[in-house]
Length: 220
Length: 195
Image (cartoon, rainbow over the protein chains, first blue to last red):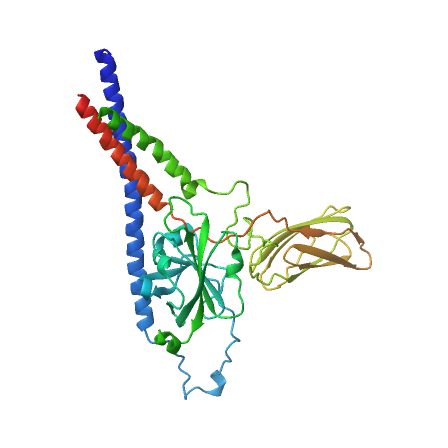
């Protein structure tokens, strides 16, 4: 091999090395940025939620001084407006497995990167089958250790709801019957399965919990 | 040792695209039927095969206008869980007038269509359901005549509702980044030893 071909090979290797270095830094940069964004978002939204929960509930001053003339009948209760994607709903906590994350409306990429997503077609907390989804490699990592009778706490601005785990199941992604509303107040957690898998996991891990009152939850 | 370094570098280069191939970026189902929400198609239409709870989509739409001659009317609409939007265009034959109706129906409200020039009166009542809308046209008026029928069918793209995709690309990206760095390091070591 002559000297010119050796020099060419070295030059190629150098360029390959630089290219790989660039790709490596770029990929790790994306990962780091995403992690920082998620961590900061969780911190900020937790603060906002805590402040909102501490604030005294708004009361209408149904004053004794109100005169009959100024009385305005309240409109009938309307169904809640659909929330915008990404808006804060509350916080989910599963103390035994160390899960604690804010819950956002929607299950798009951004919402699931930053927190636990509320599946839009499912019920609001306390009104039916609430569907929540999150990544198995971030917020719902702890679900791999969940078991029957674990307590799940869902804090929202409308109140705190306690659920007790009834069962877990591994289903296909098309198996949406787990999100069906049975008329009872339930919580369904969805994440990917298997928990350790590179790429798009082929199945879904389902956790179904039934709402219990606070006294029942304390027994645990 | 040199061979080992070279093989490591080659392996890393080959492995990186393979890891990307496994990532969620590359696992979308083929075809146009990517549903955005469970129970709905990519057109935000309801999936009739889905067992997801569906919102109330029945509504009544009324058109008031006057036409003469033959009217051709077509309606296209898209359904959302709680809202229905439709556009109806009617054309009268002899006088060549055109009416356009825009109807936004979220809770069964009513839209009105008026034709510019016509004689007679046409009242069209449209009732929509989740999968199809059947229009019933009723014509009243002393001098006008109206013939024609209209129907609107929502085209539902074949889709299967599915649970949310909860696989993150980030671990794949991180692994690919680490592999690329290792490969770069291996190449540098190889080049130094051969220098």
